[in-house]
Length: 131
Image 1 (cartoon, rainbow, N blue to C red):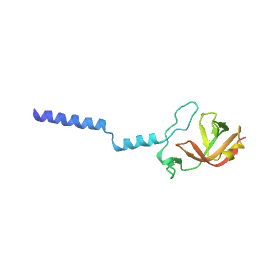
Image 2: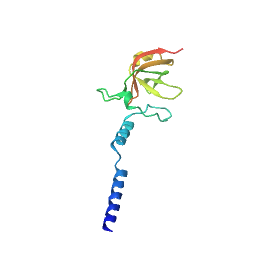
Image 3: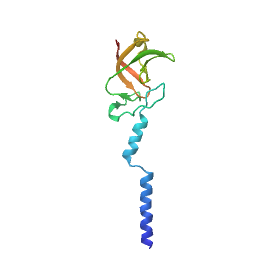
């Protein structure tokens, strides 16, 4: 009888630890998901989390996309900043070169650059009007 109670206690202890302490792989996944920052939105809708193989950590501490991506929208001035606003998704992106973007205020453009996920800023490589 003592052995039976001891075995039950051991099994319950193992189950308790298994439920409380997740395996290390799950813990890392949760850290990666929480590290990615969603772009600033006007309607506060969510954005899918970023995959770890799509980003790198530059010296500034910002998470930046590895490859340049293309973003389209309208250049507007919002809260004193020149930003790119996607009218469809309502996502607002800061632009690192406001002087270059100012000439396109109120116009639909295509911006190519790398996105800093934490600040939602596009490091612009090019900007051109869309007809």
